[in-house]
Length: 445
Ligand code: GUN
Ligand code: ZN
Image (cartoon, rainbow, N blue to C red; front, side, top):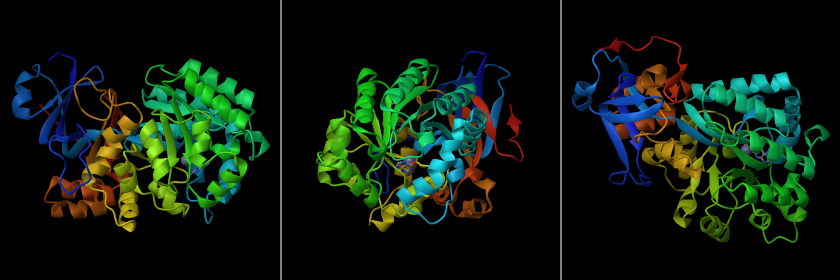
């Protein structure tokens, strides 16, 4: 090994492939070391292995950071979250359309002010890291400067974020509206300046069909066609009133999904949030086009939107990611999101194994966002984005610790009982970006 390596020691878990959703993971879908070393070089993974194998190969004097009780996993990835909605979380008593008008649009209007946008973008990236999330696909507001603010905050932490300016030219307060032409120009300008700069990428971001004119959706489709490696993100089939309204606005289209298809917005670079009230034909179109769904369980239960059919999507071959959808969602924690996903599956007579849940939050979501080549696992050469999970951080998890007899027990306890207190530290490209307050790990030679 070169002299300038960084070495972490603890339990290590990462996925190499989809483990399936049965009690036992598919063979060779994951790698686990109950005591392992993670060797990093220049922000990337150089090797993982046992202490017996690797310690003799370390240059003399190499410091090993020993995470007692720590489980090192790849950084969590969130496939759908709104930077400008932190303050909207926990707003009482409404379903989607009232929630947007009553709470969300007035709050997003504040991002016209640059200082506010920059402070919130800073807060948002810090909070993601405190929850162990190192990458995400993010909605900003319709103000171009909300995107600038987020990209600047992410770049200063070397985070691989994908984000976009919301396109919205009707049915919202004046101060949030763009026009088809202006939205197109602002998006193209942001895309040219930020897409592919370091670890950042751009996503074409029509809010949803209802708040864009046909002209705006057509221009969004043109951006997607002209920049095929940018992502596309929007909302779809979340709530019955939303679906009915969309049918009325686009009577000439066969379905809500057909609106997006018609304007060239489907494909394997598109992530549709929610997709709850859908049918087999929709699933077949998604599978055939490679279009992804972001499953947002805490949002779907909080807003009373419905129960996503996870097994139905998987069986149809639809790529599904897991997401918080803050501020419709009630937590930035991917652990809390796994817990809610499990409960949604149970209410549908389905299940979500801890293997599948942790796969989704890491490699599965990396695949959904086309980031598998750079994050989501500890394969050699990946960016060293990882977190240290630790059950001693919260009283309930600590209580549960002695009852965990297997890795499966530990993962299930972490997902059902865990939150940001289970995240002892978060690293991005090998740099410590968050450490939970409390005693620091002992360092051994
Ligand atoms: N549909 C259109 N906009 C939004 C939003 O901001 N959040 C959610 N959950 N659904 C939406
Ligand atoms: Zn959303």
